[in-house]
Length: 353
Image (cartoon, rainbow, N blue to C red; front, side):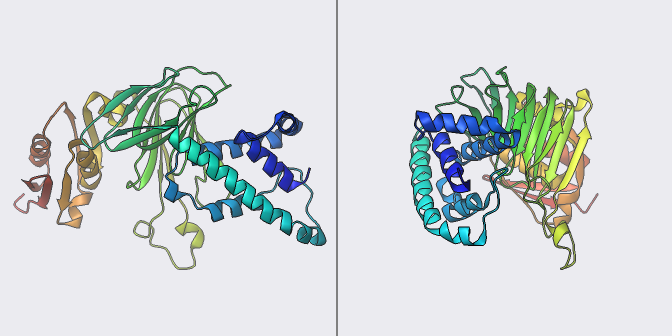
């Protein structure tokens, strides 16, 4: 089989359009070489990831262009004349692949389950495999009805704490986010991937996870980082404000800042305390704290002074139902004033201190 035939066969297998003979062909090809198995696994996980995206996120033309450009392992390069002979077949393949993907995407959208939590709330759910999930305010968790049958894959936007049920290697537990995939190798971890945050973060309480994706944002290759117990991985996305670089520093502009740090078990509640109605800040800036408080108390916080956002504060709050009590405690140790109008809070600098 040539490159295009293999791709078509793999897509038919993944979307369950393959007949018995084609299923056997896929199994033989996958088992023929470790690189074939790796290629298939990446394609399968990409497909699973796509099932949980919103329809307007998918760009069919770009997706197909990337798929067409992929090289099957150990496939010989085409001769120049042979390339031209493939043009007609490639056009036909595009139509068939698009039809297959759109058809199965539509079916899976109908079979997708969504659990969402509004700002101001926290929700605990139990998945069909026994996995416990706590969803923080402003978060969404998606998975389809085949969960725990053919896959244990979920899609997260926001923050969640996972206590994974044992499932063996036959059906790995995967958490897809907008930028990264988290493969569970252990049991308990916190994951933070809000769309409007400038960073991605995962904290492992027990076990181990693998974070997979284009981590350094400067290569097309997949990267993988292993995060062990009591470790925090934080990946800051590049921004023009954070990196004052020259016009010719193209690589630096695209570079993510990656931090891996050890956390003492006594301070783990800074990362997962929210599920027990505990907010812990340890040298966080007011800008970071404001985002947490906005989600936790369903408010809008405005700061009229950019310098305020960089003031750092440490403190913890347990089961405090109203934000004004939190702000009073922060005000007691920080040079701020605040006023509340409806759902909007204005924080200003206290110049008297």
